Structures are given as C-alpha cells and as structure tokens.
Image (cartoon, rainbow, N blue to C red; front, side, top):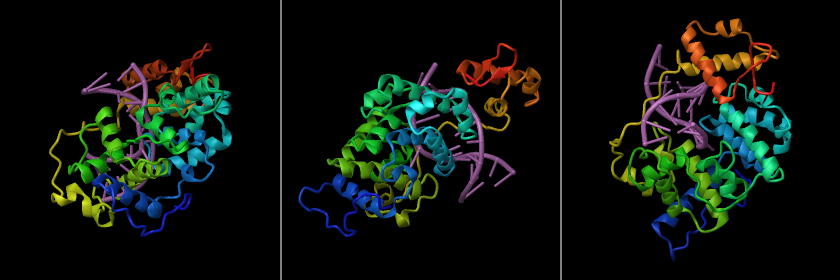
Amino acid sequence: MSTRTIPPHNAERPDAGETPETGLATEIVNWFHENGRALPWREPGFSAWGTLVSEFMLQQTPVARVIPHLEAWLERWPTPADLAASPPAEALRAWSSLGYPRRALWLHEAAVQITERHGGVVPSDVDALLALKGVGDYTARAVAAFAYGLRHPVVDTNTRRVIARAVQGQAEPAPPSRGRDLAAMEELLPAGESAAHDFNAGMMELGALVCVARNPRCGQCPLSARCAWLAAGSPAYLGPLKAVQKKYEGSDRQVRGLIMKELRAAHKPVTDAEIDSVWPDAAQRSRALAGLLADGLAVASAEGGYTLPHA
DNA sequence: GAGCCGTGGCG
DNA sequence: TCGCCAAGGCT
C-alpha cells in the first residue's frame, strides 16, 4: 500500500490533546498505511466513476469476485455516459454471475441520472449521491470519501464490527441503525480530510483482514492493547440473533438466477418451453418469472417469449 | 422494520 | 458436508 503519503512508521503520537478516540484513529491509520491491500480502486488516478462502479459491485459480494468484472466493466464503459448509452441488457450481461442483478440495472439507471442531472460527472455531494438509484447511506459516503477525499463517516459491516468490539466490548454489532452507526463513527473520525479518509478505509480493511466475523486474528490486531472486547475476556455475543439466511438451494432466488442465466445467454426471445426447462416446479417458475418481470429484469417480447430489458 | 434479493468460497 | 458470510439497498 503505497499510493499515498506514508508517515514514518514510528511517528510519535502527539501527547498533547490525545484522547482515546484519536489514539485509536492513529493506530488504524498507521496500520492501514502498512497493511492496506493494493486494490484497483486505491490506485492513483482511479476515477470517481470507477469508485461508484466498484461500490455497487462490492455490495454483498467479496473483493476477489469483483475485481475481474470491475476491470472489464470500466474498459467497456469508462464513463457514466458510455454506460447510459448502452441498453440495460448489456449491463446485465456484463454483470454476469456477480449476483443480485438488480444492482446492474440500478447502476445503469444511476449512470443515466448522472448523465442527465450532473453532466456526466459523478457528484461529490452526499445528498446528490443518495438521490441516485441503488445508492444508499454506505455507498453515498464511500464515494464522497474515497473518490473525492471528503470528510464523511463511512460505515459498512466491517466498520460496525470493529466498533462493536474495540469500542463497545461486544462480540458482534447490534442490528444496523443508521443514526447510531454514523454518530459512533463520527465520534472516532479524525479532523483532517486525509486522516479521515485513511481512517474510514482502515477500519473497513481491519474488519476485512483481521477483525473478521469468525475467528478474529486478535494477535495481529493493532488495537489489541486497547480493545474493549479483548479486555473483557472476549465474551460471547448475547444480543438479538441475526435472521438466519434462508437456504439458497431450491429457493425462488435460485430459480430467478437460472432464468436470468438463460436470458443473458440468449440473443433472441427465450420461449416458455425454454423457461420450463430450467426448473421442474411450475408454480415456483411462475413466481420467479413474475418477480423478474415486476423488477424490470425481464420483459415480455412482442413476438412471444422473454428478453432482457432493451435487448 | 422485516423480508427479499444471487452466488460462491471457506472453515 | 453445510451453515455462515460477503464494501447494502429497496419495498
């Protein structure tokens, strides 16, 4: 990780004015400088559009799966206007098997909105970003902070876990709460833009590499000496249980995925018979197809059968 | 606010 | 093997 000015490894922390919060931030920033991964979106000159695309792709999808799709995407559509000029069907095909294909549809719609409202330039204002389709609290602040260097708290699942443990002494974060989570991060955020940027990125990186959900590597953690959870003896989580993720195998979601796969591969309308062949249960097929039509991921063709939108 | 939305890798 | 988890957001 050497894309930014790196302070001396053992830079002395200022004694005057140091609070527990600024001490924590300093540890994170220094750790990030030494241990942050060299990811595409951290390269110098990476565009704000590239950051936005990467954040869409990274929603609920691991880094390793995103990188090849991201690079192909940006080669094909280097600007929002380039994507806006292509049919949504092409975005869905390029999205391939990344999952949650509605994200591709929303990203295309956001590209249209950026082209129409912002002259093709990804906005830096959080409220303008929030107004874009598919952009929520996390993504809006991530783009403002990471693409434009603005000082905003960025809170994702990694950040929430690090705060829960290091600050709150809990093994797992409480269920997400927009106001509480942003306030908790704001409390820790360094005053300067550059430090705030590295702190936001560093908290996420620590949560992704060290303070992971299962079997955290506390022996490698820069916060181990000040971690409230470790100090308390790593107590088990007692709060409300997370909703159990439903089984994917045999679910309507799987059937939707299979139909989408057919639609992506086809360059003419997919017939009812072809739809029927992807899954044995007719009622489930019917629900899945109706859902895809309602979501705009599939459209009924005038010639019969179904296609991707604007195919 | 709860439920829903894909897919694959890992322990 | 299989449950858990992954840089969320929308309805």
